[in-house]
Amino acid sequence: MVINRRVLTLDEFTLQAFRQIPNATGELSALLRDIGLAAKRINVEVNKIGLVDLLGETGDVNVQGEEVKKMDVFANNQLIGVLKHGVSCAGIGSEEMDDIVVFDDELSNQSKYVVMFDPLDGSANIDTNISIGTIFGVYRRKSTLGKPCDRNDFLQPGVGQVAAGYVVYGSSTMLVYATRRGVNGFTLDPAIGEFCLSHPNIQCPADGKIYSVNHGNFFKYEKPVQEYITCCQKKTEKDGGPYTNRYIGSMVADLHRTLIKGGIFMYPGTTKKPAGKLRLMYECNPFAFIIEVAGGKASNGSQRIVDVQPTDLHQRVPLFIGSKNMMDECLSYME
Ligand code: AHG
Image (tube, rainbow, N blue to C red; front, side, top):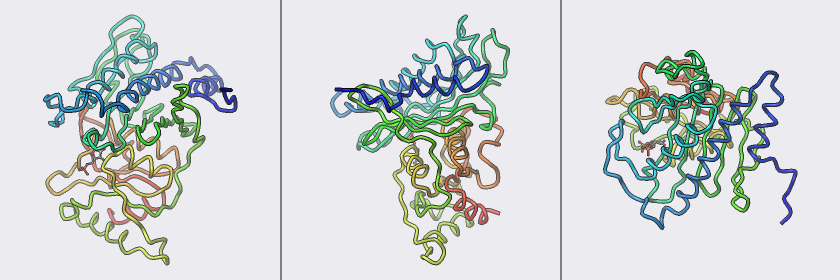
């Protein structure tokens, strides 16, 4: 087989990107490559999940009060493993863990980044072969280099992210990441085990025709949310419609589609759970960063997601995210 040299691998791409930035140390490029490595390992296990005994619940309950699937634990350990042994990460926060993990060793204390991640989002869908994913956000630490990182390095608003991304384990496996310079997508070529640049400079279309929300909760949503959903249902050709509803129930899959095709995704609060279900630090902030770099918008209904000041590592937040013009219309209902 002759390798197509017009195709850039993730490693080549991150190296090229780092060379364009004066005074860059290459730490971020190394960190993204480390996450790519963990993603490949997770992908191998996700692909054979029907065959091996990783399927099923560990029986533990995570900090969110949800049952932990074995694959969640595997994915969490892979990410911690590569980031701890890399040279760019001082510590991590994970949706699966109560508290942050500080990599307190000589090399890690010199690293300028901390990473927040959801190792395997949508894991409730594992048993039925629906696409699931890994989500991550990278922050520059505030604490002094040379010392261990601390909690304040993690409790930063999402606007402080220097990069964010996700991996979707689907009909093909893709890693998409954003820095302020743009959003780029890489598809895993299983023949060579490399993520290859397949979606350069992704832009989220300003308009879309898909709205994505859990209709089962309709009567639990606040009135403005119900009114906006009803507006989506009533759209005709005259006002940019008709819209169609698509809801996979796996955030990475729903938002990957929203990013590429345009549309709006919502996980609003309900009367009983006003903050909704999704976690600010591990799910909403990374996607808000990505979609904003791609030209879209993300809000909790009254504020940009990335401006929310976190007070708790595991706090939840209502989420409205997607194409710019659809978001503007949605937010006009929230006002
Ligand atoms: P989990 O990781 O616990 O499976 O949660 C998945 C999240 C997210 O991916 C998805 O958008 C949402 O839960 C779906 O929740 P509902 O089933 O309540 O719609």
